[in-house]
Length: 383
Ligand SMILES: *Cc1c(COP(=O)(O)O)cnc(C)c1O
Image 1 (cartoon, rainbow, N blue to C red):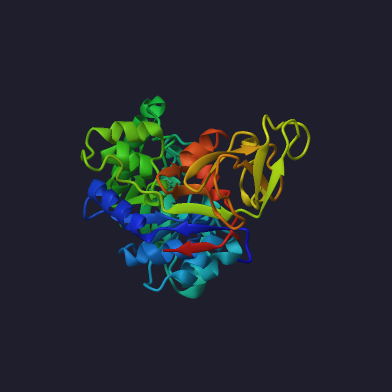
Image 2: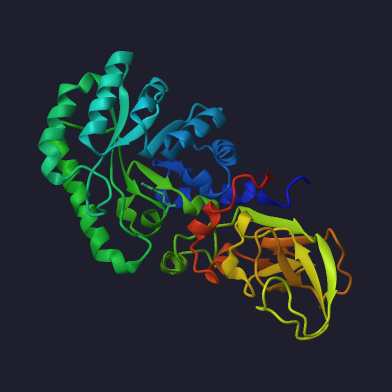
């Protein structure tokens, strides 16, 4: 093993998640697999392969570099859509390959039209409109100008989508704001229609919106966190709980497990301090395992004296401070610990499990952040 830990990705779990999402959104809706942030830490290439083998043919990225990776990994000619950052210099590459992209300002629209003209192609654009998220999107007041520019260059534009994004569909605290965004979006849609502009797809929903606001499920949904087996929030889960089958109370299955092994074992006398400083003093004669993962591998320093790992099926505490490359684990209660024994940081071992949520809770990180912070160079093994 050249690396100190590895991440396992479970294909079967992915299949189940997609089935559940498919049930929620219906047969006709396109599921776009959102793979930004290195596919939420799972590895873009892994997820593109697994998703395509489950019938997914649409991927959404934040930026061009991610789109390049999807493009290279795809073997089924899937459609790719860039939702965020792109440099104008990348437009020829993007437009040449028929990659779709968000347009939320006139500068990008102009550049896209120019490049499309030069290439004698159509730019596949998704017009993003401002409905209340206040991040990106054309303003309501800009619609006339937008319409004119679109009509003028109609030959060089493929109007793939009209889209928006909700400001927190995972929490009921945002209910009024999300509802008013839906209304606003429908106003744009109707206005464009009245003016003879029809888009190929209307899409607004992320995982949380798809699960909590069925009216946001349109021609396409953009699903990130749910395909990786996580509810967008505890609240979204609770809101869906009643409708879930009694024998399948959690249909979303985690894909990821994170594992390492014991690097060395040491006996420590009662009263000794373990690791840097004095944050942990042995309260008895102890046996300590050193595990070669630390904050440089995504195991937050905030988990010092708080984190838990599984060894031999038992939940065991991290003692002392998390260092750059190691943690110390109290294994005094194990009967025959050995160097090389498997250590589970996230996942199941025998009858116990450490979930991403429990791991995240102690550091106040939400699933999204914890997953995307897993370094890209930890090997991923698909199984
Ligand atoms: C990240 C993102 C999504 C997916 O969000 P999830 O909550 O992970 O489903 C959808 N749309 C946009 C614009 C996004 O940035």
